[in-house]
Length: 156
Image 1 (cartoon, rainbow, N blue to C red):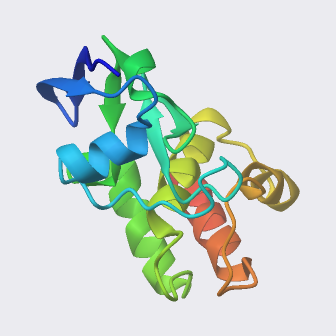
Image 2: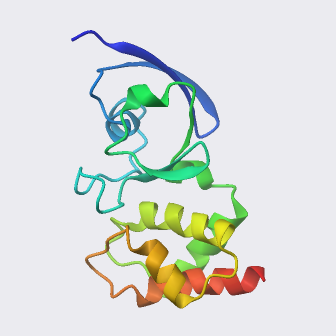
């Protein structure tokens, strides 16, 4: 198979890479760009561990073909270092004991940030519904939900 050229912006930096036509964005991010904060869990788009932002919207990088991201802006967990909402979420996750093994955490944080920005009036039921696509095998989700609700309340 011949490789295809893809130009995209990742965490604010332009990147031009060659990928296999069937290569997934998660593999490009982790293998080629060495951004290992994006975790791969199920490789079927079900668990949410690989969630990144593509053009400002959370997306599963394990089922997104890298070639379809030509011209896109991608932000991985590493690209949120200076983001005030992400900083508040990280602090709340720590305070609410929402972290255990940490494998789901990058995708969970990207999703939580989207909830905070998109649904400022979300209640517990809505937060739980929005987080349903991100699986965690370690927690009962209580701490994660409390952390998101804490940030939502602080921003009101």
